[in-house]
Each structure stands twice: as structure tokens, then as C-alpha cells.
Amino acid sequence: MADSNKSRKDSTVRFARNKAAFEEVLGNPFVKPEPLQGHYQRFKTKSVIKSTVYSDETAATRNNCQPTVLDFFCDVERIVGKVMVTKDRIDLFWRTYVTDEDDRLFTPQEREEIEQQVGSSLLELKLSPVLGYFKTERKPGMMTRK
Image (cartoon, rainbow, N blue to C red):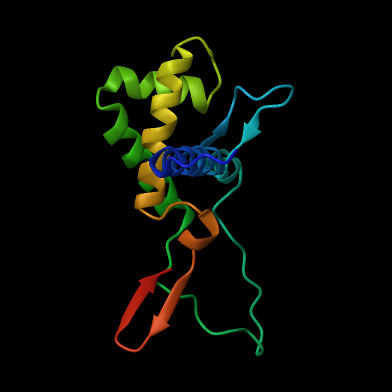
């Protein structure tokens, strides 16, 4: 029998969407056997310095309004700072989710709440999906992020 409670369905969809956004950006160190790495960690392990080969056939200039990887790092860290509030909790968050020092710093209930709050903020500020974050539309008179 199908569930007729619309608010429960919406809540389940919202929960799954927030969790997916969190895992896409920050990953999940609690997945077994291999932790899930998010875009934040992947970008941190790559160099942001690029080399360019100049020729007569080079494309047009880069869109200066398009966010960079450094903008992405700043935005993610700002969201974590707003959700976690105190410096101690921010440090615990990074030790748990990014450096993977200790997975017992938060209870499973606390982790679920943190992932939901951060995931919701990532969606609200359009950091997830990550590919959409780095795209901008060129419109006459203004630049907008998709």
C-alpha cells in the first residue's frame, strides 16, 4: 500500500537530497569498505596552478565571473562555519569528515543532524551539484550562476 502522507514523503525526499549534496561535496568517511571522497577533498589534492599553451588558435578569454576552486573552498568552509558555530565544533567537524582522524567525535545522531544542515545549506547556496557551481551564463549586461 502506498504512503498517502505527503509531508512524510516530502521529508524523506528532502532528507535524501540533503544527504546526497553533503556526500557529493564533502564525502562520507563512514562508508565501508572504502570511504566516499567528496569534491572538496579531490580539489584539495590537486594543484590550482594551470599551464597554458599559447597559439594562434587559442579560445577566447576565460569568463572572469566564473568561480574558481578557491572560491569553492571558501564557500564550503563558510557554510561549515555557520552550521558548526564554535571553533571547537568546527575543528571536530574537519577532524571527522576531512582528515578522518577519529570517527567517534560525534554520535550517529549528531552526524545525521550535521549532514542534514550542511547539505541543506549547500543546496540553498547552489554549491551542489558541484558542476552547476562552476558554470555561468553570459547574458548581455550581467553574469549569473546556473
